[in-house]
Image (tube, rainbow, N blue to C red; front, side, top):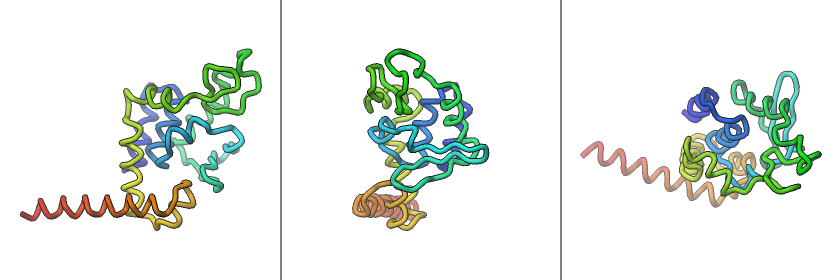
Length: 166
């Protein structure tokens, strides 16, 4: 379900930068603060794969999720100005040497998704299908935070089933 939602983002007329941010939120439950501070050093692009290092571990983006990264890297969006001659930021801001603010990023995504709601929904779904320790290490969350999401999503599901049975 998560990958289907992310794939549909590729069909939108979003700028590749916004599409990448939305994919990182929907698929990997990343916070807007972490996405805004993403650098090109955290991304590896080869002919076959695109991987992003979110928490010390590279994660491959399968097609079509890799298209936004490839497009951004090829166009050097907002990098050909005096303010950003050699910027390492993937999400460059308006001020020289600075990345986009998380608030600006959330506002850019607002027409397509609520960043917080999408991230929390992804966390709830991932904690039901993936071991907490692996998920925490891969995505850069504390195990305690993910345990809380797992408990919340389980109790929500249990309440849903109980109401369906009565």
